[in-house]
Length: 87
Image 1 (tube, rainbow, N blue to C red):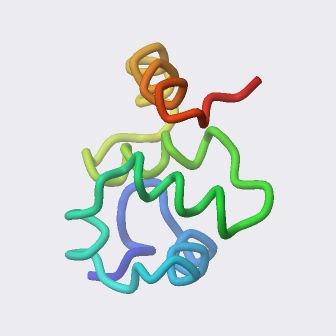
Image 2 (cartoon, rainbow, N blue to C red):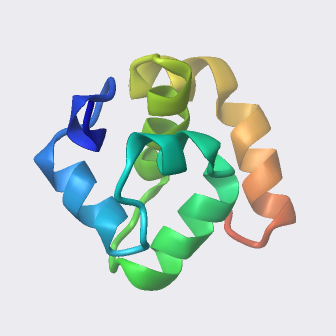
Image 3 (cartoon, helix red, strand yellow):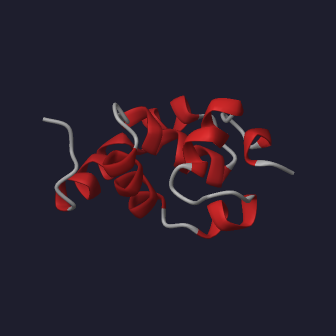
């Protein structure tokens, strides 16, 4: 299985994750989604909030929109604690 085969991912997701050193499903699945999002924000221009939803969704085998709907407040609080919440 490749990264692009995970729920909600595709070729573009696989290419973006490669920019931060994630080349395998195992490495992706073991990554902390918030640390990975922070690294993406620092490395890939225009990384938006949907990226954290997609990361969590792929790790939990859920659609990113379900993650956004069900976990948005919790995610935003955590991002705020990290100084990464949208303004």
